[in-house]
Each structure stands twice: as C-alpha cells, then as structure tokens.
Length: 374
Image: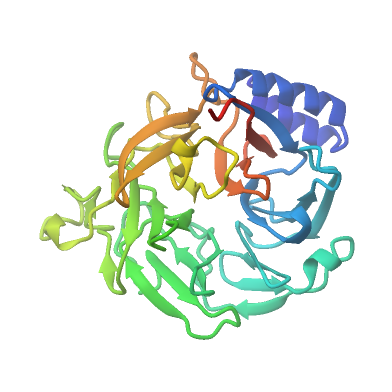
C-alpha cells in the first residue's frame, strides 16, 4: 500500500494518531534528498490538503487548503523548529487555497471571493467572522482555486484560471492575472492567456513579477512545457489557449495564430511537472549562492506515462533572468514510481529557513542549512 494511502487511513481513523503519523513522517524524511549541509524536518502535521502558506505576526503560519475547505494556523511558540500550536481559522469554505497576511488581517481567496479576518493573531482560539472583500469572481471549480499575495504596491494579486483543459472562455475574467486594493476596490485585469497559475513572487531588487503556469493536457508526455512567466505591462497575453510554451500552436485553437504575438515564457519547465508555489530567497541562513535565487515547488504529473516532478527545484538567475534549473529536494517520487508526497508552496520564515507544504501528506516540512558557510 502506498504511504500516502496509509496516511489517509490514519487521518480517517483518528486525527490524534500523532505517534503513528510522526513515525510515518520520519520514514518519508529519510527518503528525501537535499544538498549537502541542509536538513529536513517536519514543522507541522495533521493539516489535511495543506497548500498555500502565509506568514503572520509572532511566527504564526497560515495554511490554505483546496477541497478540504479549511484554513489553519500553526505556530512554533517555543522556537524549537516544530509547530506546537494548531488552530482552525475557518472551515466549510469553497476551496480556500490562497492566503495572504497584512496589517493584522488574514485574507483568504476562495474560488468565488476574497474574505478577510481582522486582528486574527489576537483571536486564534476564537476567530472572528470574516468580512467579504470581493465576491465577483466566477464560481467554476475547474482551475478555480486561487493563489493570493500582496505585491510591493500593497495591492492584492491573484489569478483566475481557465474553466477547462483547452477552450476559449466566454467571460473575459477567465485565464487572467488580476489585482485589486486591499478593501476590494480598484479591480483590474493585468494580463490574459494564463491557463492555471497557482504561484507567484516578486524578484528582489527589481520587483519584477514572476508566476508559474501549468500547460494544457493531452498533447503527449513531453508537450507542452510548463512555464515560468514574467509580467511586465498591463495588457500582456501569455498565449493560452492559442499558443503554448512560446512556440507550440494549439492543434485545436491555434491554427490562425502566430506564437510570436504572445509573451513567451521566461523559463520552460518539463511538461506536466505542475509548478505551483515559488519564492525568491531573501534570507541569510542559506549559502550566498542561493541569495535571490528562485525555489519552485513542482507538484508532479498526474497524466504522464512515466511520472515526473514531485520535487523542489532551484532556478538560477543572472542579470535578472533565469538561466538554469537544478534539483533542490527530491525523493517524493520513488524509483519504482510510488508517490510519497506532493510539494505545493514555499515560505521563508524569520530565521531564514524554508517551509514547504505537502497536500498529499497534510504536512509542512522545514529545511535548514546546518553546513559550513565558509
């Protein structure tokens, strides 16, 4: 029986089977590989379908989920590297994948709306009822889950995925990158042609916005590439559904289009690896070679004859542009094809370590550097 199924059974039997879960988690940790000098540990568990992460005050980490419908908060109150407090902020929400924190308030992106929990870190044991910030998003579930971040301009950014594998959506809001003010006003569409983006971050020093996009299915094992894109100006179009990867016309919808009329990816990943959350590293704990480099959670393929992805990659930048990709953490996909877990999002916390969520296991990993910086 695959380990991920064992974990699911444990959650169903009783959520407090901590000893058995921790033993199983340690077995997973032993299967994962990180560069020399780095250590992996379990930061938090018992977080079914843990996906997007956001850092609040006092080290509180907020955790969005997908189909689970719950938003959690966890906290390492004694600074031993393991979260010892866990709170349920809200439940029975509509795929609350996106979480963002600013000025004491937690913002949560459901499929059809953004809601806000004010003064949340002061009320973790008894969360307030949320305020609706914006409720004009489509309610379609297909690619409807949203990532949510505050940009350098203090505005909320999210995206609206395509309601299909491949189609020309009837509503202009689909397949777009959007932003709005924190109070829900000033809504605007920034870019189009984005099939399914569930991760973005701003490059340090330049504030350039980079985001992942998952390519269409059913063009074979190796096409089209998944994408890392850079947004530079309002009105840009990144190709979907007419052109994929910057050079592949869609066989169904791209016959009368030229790929050069769309913005090409800044970097092309392998097909079907499903790049999701990403973070530029800004901390001081890791060796200098990782400073301002990009980490990407590659969730893993579901429709490829030989699965690939299931890892965290490091994208090296030079002069503001991505130039190479290396494996940073792998082992979630075993040599015999078993899937032990699926990384989703990446968050840098106060001590410069990284947290990585895993929606298959319902855990958050912590990666620290313990090696010699010299």
